[in-house]
Length: 499
Image (cartoon, rainbow, N blue to C red; front, side, top):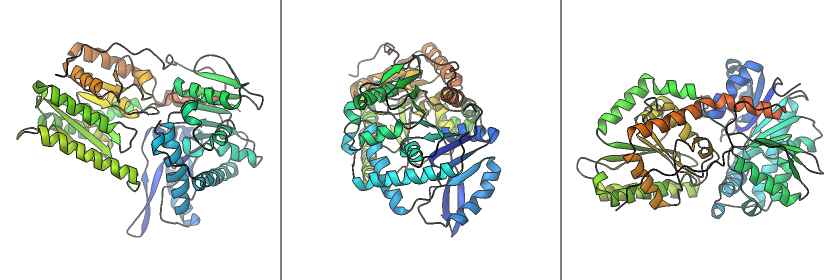
């Protein structure tokens, strides 16, 4: 049976919902995000299973958990199978190896890495547990589709148990070049795990090429066959199919959200509160990869060098809490709050606060209102697998009059280069000049660029991604695929000097 028609077994670190306990009672909260939006309808329509950790830190008996999950599975139209983790496993596998070793290393932030043998041991153990659940509830006709860096060893664990299954893997974060990847003490073991999959896909062509370079470092005789987004790498140990398939969003869903009553109300309130001012918007999860401090410094440079722009601009930064128990993230939040205070303390007047800061998550329809109101979205991660905020902003820009300032190091830069203003987030002066250029941009130019952006996101939406992933996994030709994401950068618009 082809993967296009096979039953799907989706495996991710988290289930598409979160288990929480309040007032002594367990309840589920619906998950959100592109993966949930994409895979839910697919699994419901063709039948399938989603395997993952329900997110609970408090212990719960497995029979009770299955009893709670039953009605939720019935309502969703596909089975939800939990993998239970104890507190030590959450600390060592999830917070340890996955998020304190792989996450910073793959984002080119080696100074944040913590390599501990105890964490690596837990990673293998938990991957083995996920593999046992996948093996028990699948057969040889199914396709096991594994997601992200938490589970790079699942296919290898299946093979160690002599379980024959068709497996595919998608990495949602960047894959580093050899000079960074080889710093991982368990580098060979990770490559061995990834090459155990039948198909491995990455967000961008650059990530795929980095992976191929690492393959050659360990298996010098490996050779690439084919051209385009999906190729075969031949090795003496067996061939592996690798691809570059950028994930996306449900464009129609976000466009509809932007037209919802709550979004329209939020947009009108923001524009009224900041009447006559250009609104810059940043939306990020609290993380050191997002370039938030550099962005705020650039905004401060803009205010310092452009007196004429003071009181005619405002920056709204929405920061979604994340990993608050991790010391590095707590320090980052403190640094961000100090940066916000410095800018407001230096430049605020009785009628103008230059920077508004929200440390909370917003309902999706309210967030769509912020997107719709923003004249300029500033999406400047230091490194990002894709960054769906950039695409959400474009989908919600129903007036077609916004400007996207986008980091060259976001995976989305490849698809959105022809409409966005691309920046190096490490170049604070250059970023400040680009923010000025975004303010100066003529309406005709803004509209032309936004048309390109919206067209790109609409054409290659989340459903396009699912379809092409399954086609690639089955060896079929891809549909409506964009050019390689190593596209040349467009010349920047004429820049006004900072001072």
